Length: 193
Image (tube, rainbow, N blue to C red):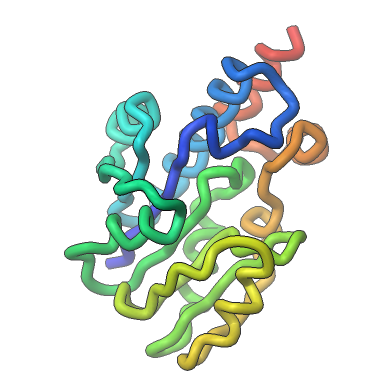
C-alpha cells in the first residue's frame, strides 16, 4: 500500500499570497483540506505540520498528523518518512486541484527502485513518488526538479497538470479557481463576498 506524505507549513508558508494573514490562513487550510481529501482516498496519509489547526483538519479528514521538526520542507518530509515502508507519494499542500486519480497516476509512474516527480511551472518540485522512503533526498527549493532528476537512481518527470499547477499567488488561485477542490472554492467564494 502507498503512503502519502503532505508537508504543511501553515499560513506562514504562503507569504506570497497577497492577502491579509487571516485570509492566507483560511486559504492555506482550505487547500490542505482538498489535498488531504484526495490523499486519504489513495492510501495512508501523513500530514507533517507545526500548525495545530492543520493537524486537527488532517485528523478530521482521516489523515495522521506528524510533528514538524522545523528546518524546512526536507526535514519535515524526512520526519514523516520515519518508520514508513513501501511506496511513498510526497504531495505539496498547495495543489488544490489535485484529485485521487492524479495521485494514482503518480503512483503508477514510479519506476521500480526509482523516483518520479512532477515539476512546477517555476522549476521547483510539487510532488514525488518514491519506490522506497530510503530514496528521498531533501532537494527542495529553487530548481529542485533538476536536482531530483540528477539523483543516482532512475528518476523520471511526468506531466500531471493538477499536480504541476501550485498556488503561490492570488493570481494563481484566480487562474485555477474553476478546477479547485470544494474547500478551496468555498473559501474563495467567502473571500469575494
